[in-house]
Amino acid sequence: MKKQTVKKHDNLINTEQEQIRKIATKNNNIEKINFLKTELEIAANQIQMQDAELETATNRIQVQDAEMEKSAKLSAIGLLSSQIAHDLRSPLAIIESALWLLRQNSLTEEQDDKLQVIGRAVNKMKSEIDRTLSFVRNTPLEIQTCLISNIIQSTLSNINLPKSIKVKTINCDVMIVCDPKKLEIVFTNLFNNAADAMSKSGDLIIEVIEDQNSNIIKVQNSGPTIPKDVLSKLFVPLFTTKQNGTGLGLSSCRNIITQHAGTITASSEPTVFTIEIPKNLASIVEKA
Amino acid sequence: MEKQNILLVDDDADLLKVMSEVITTLGYGAILASNGQEAVLQFEKHIPNLVFMDVKMPILDGFDAFFRIRSKFPNANIIMMTGFADHARWKEVKSACAIYLLEKPWPTEFLSELIRRHVTTKVSC
Image (cartoon, rainbow over all chains, first blue to last red):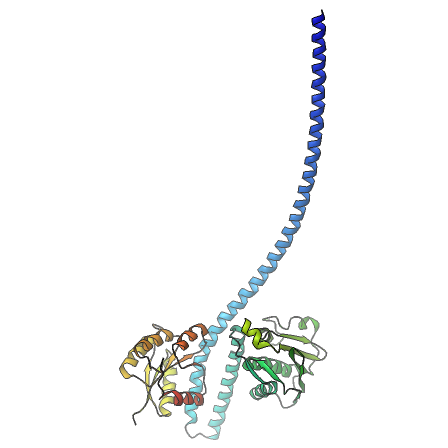
């Protein structure tokens, strides 16, 4: 009888212990669940963050894709135009030599006049090719120290500005360290653009301002105001508002000025192109 | 005085034609070649005083022809001609004493001056 009671008691204890164990396990599970829930929340946050990062990255890739497409387009144009330039320069050499040979004979006024016309046409083609090539090829700078006014004069003598356009230079007798041939390409573009903008007549003002660390060249024309949406795209390659423009003029100007470690900007009302070239260009190029 | 001879090398027949006329008008003798390989043969045969060598040509290009001639004739006077300069390869031939890189097209007055200056000098490299 006593034995039986003890056994019953034991059973009771066992059941109780079993229940306590169960409760403990339950508590433990709840804790685990809570812990997992927190973990899950953190993970969800992380996923959200990664999603956002992914979106930014996708956007970046899209932008890079567009840029790559543009640069592929540009390099295709570069390749094509250098090929065309090479193929055109040989025939131009032939025409020029043939012209010279014809001029060795005595010519009638009529013949001489026509040969001069051909000669001028050849020169136009040459400068068009040079302009395209100056955009395509990035030859190293040949740095010299020279007077800005000399570069301007040399440019003006090579382009035929209409006589109705008045050129005014202010403080241009300033020495500058630059590649004069390349700067002449920039001036040629800016002066021709100004002449185009002013159509028949107007003022072309070139002013040099000496800063402590740089030379600032301002090229101003009295042409019509450049619309805002055009102003922001002026230096973008292939952008043009001219019917026969290539869209390479100003972008090659920017390439050349960037090569000089400088900047070129445009502003309207009045139209002014501002070039800034550092005075210590020689030491910058040496380091590069 | 014996006539000074100039070797003209270009794959464009018309360019060779007008250039040789210009050169004879200027009082020099003209020898012609239409690619690099012909240029090497013509040089060996005539030993000209000066060479105008186009860069881009079939069979053997101007740069390779330059080095072939230079290896046998270290004193050869060679001026390269080009429509579009490959500056990397030009540096190579310049360091082997090519005289000048003449970019097409050129004013004949400039060509004449270039010849006058280099037709009698001897390059030593």
